Image (cartoon, rainbow, N blue to C red; front, side, top):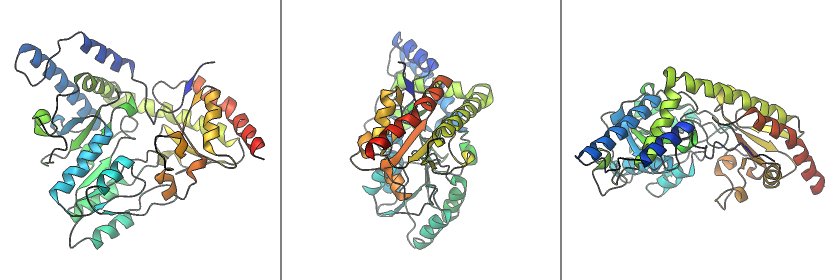
Length: 382
C-alpha cells in the first residue's frame, strides 16, 4: 500500500531544486561567508544570491531580508524588537495567531486580545477599538497573520496595516502559512515586520526570514556576532539558506507564474477533497466556506459524531497522512486555541493540505476511504 501525504501545511517535502542546491554545497567550497579569502567570498556570493531570490519572491529589497532558523524565530525576533523599542507597552494579538506569535508576545508585554468572527477572521473594528483605547500609550506592536494556519482563512491584512499606519503603531505580519502559496507583494503592504517559514513551501526545515521595513531598525533577538549586517548573530546556515533560495527561485520563475500555477492546482485538489468529504453526512468546512477567502492549499473539516483522533488513525492505516486540532495529534497538551477562539470543537476537526508534490492519486485515495473510515467509527461509538 502506498502512502499519500496530505499534511503539507505542517511541513512540505523538500523540492528537487532544493535538494540539488544543498547537495551542491556538500562538495564545497566550505567557508565562513564572513571571511575575505576566496572560499569565503564564494560562499558569501552564494548566500547573497539566495537572499536576492527570497527578496524577489516577496517583492522586497534584498537588504530587508534577515535569514532566521524559521518562522518561529522570525516571529520571536519581531516581538522582541518591538517590545525592546517600547518597554512596558502592550501588544495587540488575536487568539487565532500562531503560538509562536502569542507566546513570544505574552512573555514580553501585556497582550490585548481582539475579536475574530466564526471563520477565524480578525475584526478590523476590534483592532481599531484597541488602538483607540491605547491612544495615550500606544502599543508596541500589532500582530496580524496573513492567513490562519489552522483553517486557512485570509485575514484583512491591508486594512489592519492602514489602521496601524494611521495610529503610528508597528505591524508584524506572520506570513508563514501563506508564503510560497499566494502572491505576497510586500512592497504594496505597509507592514514593519513580516515573518516567513521555508519548510512550509518546500525549502529545508530550519530556514526562514524576517522582513524588515526599509529604514527600520530592530534590536537583534540573537546576539553574539555581526552576521546579517549585525541583525542576527551566529554563523549562517549556508546549506539551508541556499535551499531556501532555490525554493524561492522555483516559485518566482517566469514572473511568478510558477507560484500561481501551483496555487491553481492546489485549489482544484482541495476542491475535490472537500467534495469527497462532504458526501459523508455530518461533515462541514471549518473557516470561511468560500475558497477565494482561504489559502488555496488547505481546508479544515468538522466531523460530527466522532473525534478526529480516531479518524486520523483510520486514515493513517489506509495510507493517508493528515492533521487535526485535537491535542493528542500534536506536541501540545492543549487543544487548538485557534479553533477554540472560533467556537469550534478542536477534537472533531481535521485539516487536509496539499503542496507541490501532491498527485491526483493522493486525492483519489482520500476520496476512496474517508466515508468508510468515518462510518466505521460512528458504528463503533453507537
